[in-house]
Image (tube, rainbow, N blue to C red; front, side):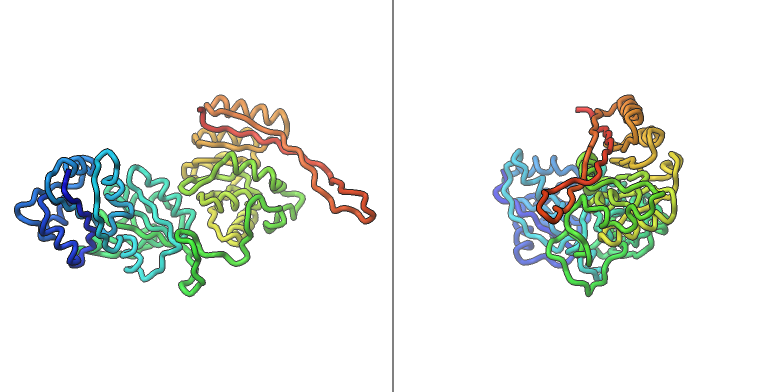
Length: 412
């Protein structure tokens, strides 16, 4: 194997003394074409590209001599170090990082970024990266030639965002462009290092958080989930409207839906948005579907109170689902078997549905079975605990209630 392998992060600025010395002594240098052309690579050194990183790693393992790998910015952050450290190659590395492309992009934008999400669109993950941009107001996306700003903006149609597109960071051709998302597809972009996708972020003077990658603490935000209905504005305020799901039902529904960052979840017949809000607090992007515009306003208010972002869609029948982006999971809170049938046509990975009768539960299960899901369900019965009356008669329970919950999950 190579006597020594130095991984140099390069951001376009002059090399440090240590990096320059390692490059001058190298007998093999691996890097992108523009890096090998711009840096003082010794004439005697063998040059290899990094288009196939695993092939390059095998060549490095076979090389006898001193080798250098040149990478963008910080090679330990979504970079080559992870692959090169794979045990199958047996390589020992010295890493000399430069400023990461993400840090450079936020510096060009003049923004703090400890509260930002950082995602990669590499490896066919553009849709999941877009879902993170739906759920969070400050995201850095590491793009590829076939998953760039235009493709990302098209996936975010209807979601108000500002794009900071950073092309060729750290090179003489560097260009930083700021556009609203609807204008991004009108341009031809070079392969950029990073794209910042910015929504309604708190002002810079707001108190900083303490955990990188998490949004700033939101005033009035309550801890926990499966909160009581009174935590959501408008819940059960109008007896003519469908009741919000009880907290214990929401808890089971969330367990079966398993929302996670990168997922897109629909809540259909979302009521006042309690389930939608709690799914969003797990990091998923959420679209809440409700019949009345006033209900959508309530959902937006509850989302704002909880410090999360939720898109709303107004409508009642299955037709409203046609314009929505592809879901990973769906909760049908109201709508019955007809809505479940429309949902499974979009083939989400997980479906949870509330049934209003045993007959409706049976029909829902048949629909899920026919669509290829592994189905299960529960009849949840509950009664609230009343305060102990004066005189020490002991606790008592209020009027009982029940909910039928049916779910479909992937086959084992």
